[in-house]
Length: 77
Ligand SMILES: [Ca+2]
Ligand SMILES: [Ca+2]
Image 1 (cartoon, rainbow, N blue to C red):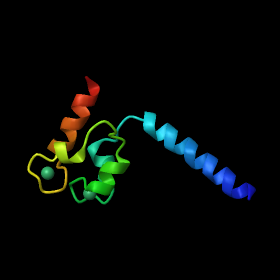
Image 2: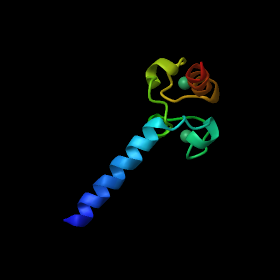
Image 3: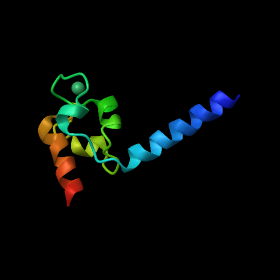
């Protein structure tokens, strides 16, 4: 199963490089373009050190541009 091992190695490499990547901008993180970041989009956004629930100030289960930007601003400090 050489192919499987190679695939796993590539997946691990991608995962580790993602962990060090800067978080995506709101526009890029909003993959479906509906103007808010849902849980799946947040997971893919690269914001690793924040909990979505703590960023979701109005508790609607999604992050607005403002709520998401707050996470990025804090990351820059
Ligand atoms: Ca979205
Ligand atoms: Ca919200």
